[in-house]
Image (tube, rainbow, N blue to C red; front, side):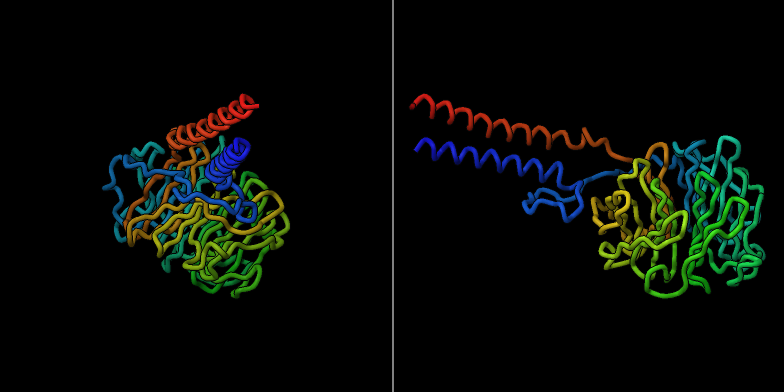
Length: 375
């Protein structure tokens, strides 16, 4: 009889280990490696919280905020907004203090990217306006002085020599100076273009369609630390992935976007997560980043549900702090989400789990001691 109770205690001990593993380990694994056993208190992690003090004064938002960029090297945040007789670009500190604004040669901003180095502060803007400066991608210094124009100002098109755009959605400039452009947001083109730092076309992928390396509204682009280019293929409800050097198609993620396609895509500085915005659902998805050489399947680690009709359009992640800045065209604001302190957040669960483990160990020790005392 005693041996029976020892077996029961051992089974309970093993069950406790399964509970602890499911709660603290399984959520970080891809779905095909998850244990079948799961507990019900919560499947998702809480990774971010809203910074209610950013910005310090929200009255500077006077239009529809379409895009945001972070210059982590210099601690600056750039916001692109649309509207009549308002500044099109606002500049804040990462702490939320307003610095300045400018409106020179910007018609209708769609995407914005900060590509600063120790030698140069630069801001790139995709302009989808129909005026004299529209259908271009422009480079500015941090004070709004125009430095470079890509495309044919005021003329949309599909040409490559000279280069033309039609509603260019967004761009990414990597540390080597190479430029990745998604063109366009509902226009003539559905393509991904890589330019060298001297603006020569290195490769081009895409046309309108649903197959591999085809697009339906390519809306956002970023490059991860392993040399893969990620494109938010919004109309096709998927993320597509390409090799940075060759442009070869590497795979796609579709299973996370059955309700709505992604409108923005970024990686966290540690490379663990992919942050995605879904415009009409007013939702942010935090996805587990894939390992090197394996795209695999999409797996949602956490969600941030925003208020109805907030409409997150594009977003950016600070390389320095990991904070997520979200440009919300419905709410006409930019909000900042900061990573939670994971240890403090999980401390009550750790205490509970440790207590549970100790209870089972104590039961096991008592029963084993009782068994040997009978012998």
